[in-house]
Length: 302
Image (cartoon, rainbow, N blue to C red; front, side):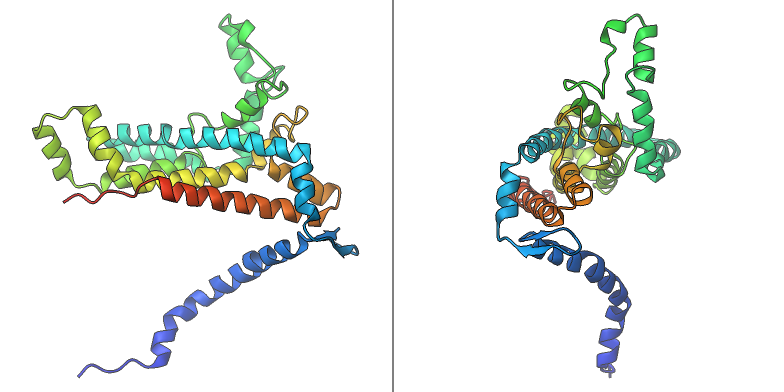
């Protein structure tokens, strides 16, 4: 006769998760709740704490700098979505086409090894590459006789935002925009039954037909996830913008995260910055829900 489990035996596995949940509550959910509360206050983080209702939200949507930041985030979001749906997917497809397991391992390691490099190091490296006076990119263009194409990439309103989007090209060397997406696509391809590929080959399907009829439907869930991550990264983008341009020149590369940081830590408008953070959260939630409704999950194939 099977012995009945005691309540302690049922609870024991969950107790191991308790420290994780406590840390999440203390460092994530409680601060988020406080941010929502303080977004309705004129709060400087110290001795000023006056309730002002939704004035912080009204001020945010009247702030031209914040509006420009939202527009820049829209451009960055579109660019990030296009990036994660192309380059990592193409790299995963090309690697999957390599028949040698050893070669696949070496190439996969080369693609993903830069993920362990801190993001700040990568950004500073690109700051050196894109520098206007003695940057690597301008020096290469000059030595190739294309000095007319050289430009102050981070110092011009025409090129600064595009230069920030281009950070990490070919977008396979970071976890936030390429490396993780590449691994998701590649792992899904490895988990796909070989019988479907063999059947497609017998039916005379070429590479493009196989890609659109088999690979894309089988990678739909991964593509939905990568788009969601791209939206989150785009709306929250801060480190690359702040390190490279601090939102300049002018407001050409300003983002809501930079506005939030400056308002909160430079001007001590913590209530206003909390409202900006809540708005960013709402934008992410709405875009994520729309993405979940539009994009399909992986099709089940027998």
